Image (cartoon, rainbow, N blue to C red; front, side, top):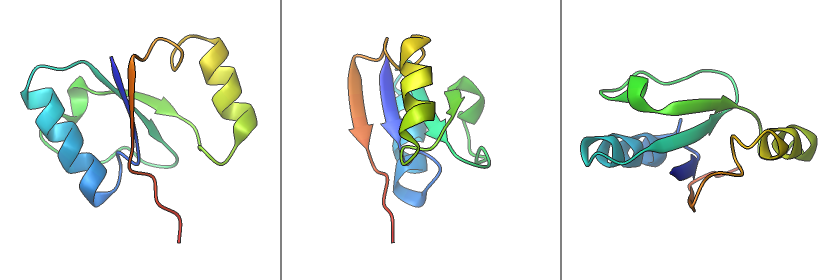
Length: 78
C-alpha cells in the first residue's frame, strides 16, 4: 500500500492516476474534496489534514495510515 499526501493537487493527482493504472494499491489523504480523475474510485481516500496532528494520529492508530508501506509526499503549503 502506498500513501500519497498532496494527492488532491495537480502533481499528486497525476501520480495517483499512474499508480492506479500500474495496478498499485494506493491511499491518499484529502482535506476538503476528493478530486475527479480516471481511477479516483480505486484510491482509498482518508479524510485528514497533515497539519492537524491529532487527526493524523487518530488515523494512524486506526491502522488506515499505519498499514502503508511507502509514503510519497506532494503536500505543499504556500
